[in-house]
Length: 135
Image (cartoon, rainbow, N blue to C red):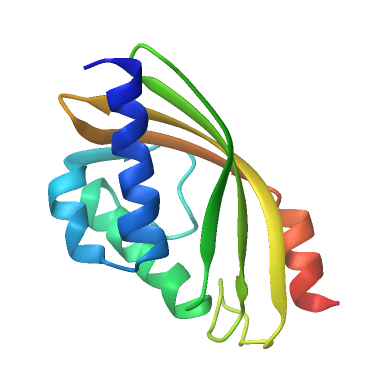
């Protein structure tokens, strides 16, 4: 696949799964043996583990929105700088809902193999996120 096609796979994941909250779309987009290089606490392996992590995010931030700020691709690797916004309306990482809005940046390094989202490494500004939830 071309770098452009790999970007399209990642953008489809962001649009359909993260923003539209269509977790069933993961069956078509994410490899069953998906690898999360920096997993959320308690995240299990594979596509099922990613689905559980996304389910937790959707529960904590039902109105979450991921915006691509910048994206580059080379070979099978896609690097995306993004902004995550939303309102904390459910438990998040053991903390009860705060009702507070968040606006944080992050960078994710993803790998697409055979047309599927196969590997990820997300770096999220967790100090800013936790600060916004506790402020």
